[in-house]
Image (cartoon, rainbow over all chains, first blue to last red; front, top):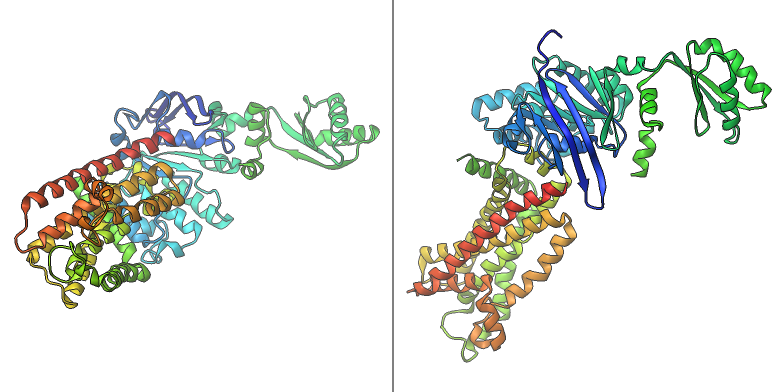
Length: 326
Length: 258
């Protein structure tokens, strides 16, 4: 906390357009202090993965500049590559080789050899709980084990910056919990900076010291999870109505209830902020009853990153539906 | 130095994969053997056609053709490994490490060539067993194998480059099937070009597959005409360097597109 806040990742005005005119990055700025866990939060298509691709030298931006670990990604890509570990969005292990063969080849690519390489590979396999499976063909491993091998391979050369692109997407709850614990452990490693992307709000909330919300190729908000949440005064009250045509009526009713903020509608759900949402529930219910609105459920919630996301983008955060449409 | 070590590392990875697929190994051994025995029997009598030229058995004549054909048909599939590695994000993983881009292609090609050298030894041994005579001895057979390997390197690099640009199996399969047969038959693989129509003779003069077959066959004779062997060998070597460099450069195009 008291160490000097040197910037390990600095990106300025990154623009990247894909064929067909898709503007994946639209002037994205980012700076990440050394030694912290930083999360890029946003739905699929927001530009998170493209940011990672540019910062890890896989892809070149149309314009803008970026420095990672003190090196320019465009002018000194090999220096950046030696300083970073990358765990891509999809597992990139070689399924036809054993775990040990995978991590050994990765080490050799970085110039590690002989006993030093064997010891380092063994230690990482042990650390990630893969020792027992190490000599089996990776094609027979579970998704969670492959993901841990990805992490082990990303660490083989002791990088100072680790990129994790949606590390837990597609994992079952147990595997996700195991990986979270491992990322928390890594975060305590001296001097290791971790930049992770996620579309899970709880993941960003739990792991990251700082969060940037990415929307349509730009950073729209940033801060610690608590700072972002405290921007939203009070609690939220959510009213789920039974019929779509009732939503507008419910919104206007809620607008007249004392102590509530301006309501917003998202499908069958009408939401409003309140200093003490629980205390407002009785008057909300009687007002809705008086207006003849059939209520399915009323929920009171402390502010979450979900609300922060909604506030900054004007859209609800629903990665599942976005995933299905992509 | 590092690039060479990395090339060997990458080749080792592909070789381990190959050795774990018994069917691949079996196919790699059986296919050229079938060609040698099948074409050897089918065209046996062609040596008696007036104008066939040099004496000796048809198997003597056929060995260079089968060996170069093995290189052409085998290494043309090289791009499939690239597509596979693109699909599994292995290429993307390599590209964010300091690995030399050339080592990714050269390592894959080196593996193809090691496999080809083993096939060459099997073909040579079998041919001797069924009565072929290599007047040019071990040096001649070594030069023939070198010619086949250069064709292999050229075809593998083209296949790799194509795979990096098109990124789908169907394209690699399509181009491979489209090119290998004509390249084989527009050459002196099965019979001397003196027996072929003029236009085929003209096309064959520009066909690197034919350069390899002619140079390899000449190297196998008792007293090779080096003015025939060396220019063709040089031409093949040059093409191999150019195509490998091109395949390496396609990584840049790939990275610009993602």
